[in-house]
Image (cartoon, rainbow, N blue to C red; front, side, top):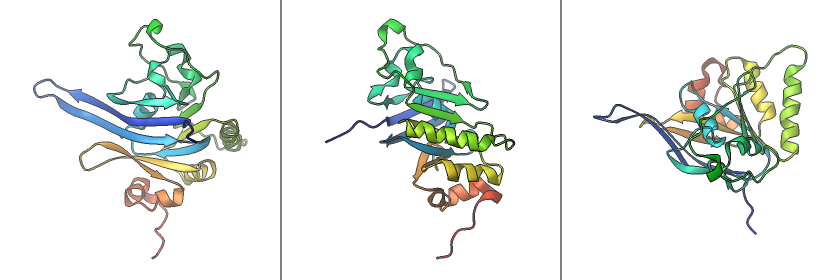
Amino acid sequence: MSTTPLLRVERLSKQYHRGWLPRRTAFSLEADFAVERPTVIGVMGANGVGKTTLFELITGGNLPSGGRVLVAGQDIHQVRYRERDRLALHYHQSYQVRSFTRNRPNALLEHAASPHTLVHLFDEPQFNTQDGYIGFMLDFFRRLREHGRVVFLCLHPNEPVHLDILAEACESFIFVHKDEARVSRLLHAQSLKELTGDARVRAYLGRLSPEPEPR
């Protein structure tokens, strides 16, 4: 018996171009994955690789060049603008909710099928190390998962505590990187240990990267 994933990013792509003659691709992102159950997913990647663009595409704040995003089976880009936050919500840095551009009349769009947000995307939130704030946020992420939600936690680690937060909060990981053709792609891992086993991730983390285990 098949079940509908909570989130399906289906052959998703986004390109930005510059110029006309010739018209050149300035940025390209491709993603294809599914999240079957409530979970907390850690996201990392260098500045400019497309982490925020990916989040905007998932929440319907950015129109894809191809593919689609299904939240509990519903295409978020076909949902009325004011109701998209019932499916997915993007919190940027200091927990500000990201806005988006309207490109179709609401009357041509459908109502959200969910009464509450199913996918929460935290984009480089600020973690105050004082007064138990980190513990409060970790508990908040866990409670969202326990209530059937998918949580994405995107951090750009510059201190060891950031890796500690990811290791404690997240059950799987995504690393956004550019391949040899300068296309941004997603590397998936089931643990932080598995993720940091990749040379590209270790190069990104630099001094924070754990030493590879001897064979």
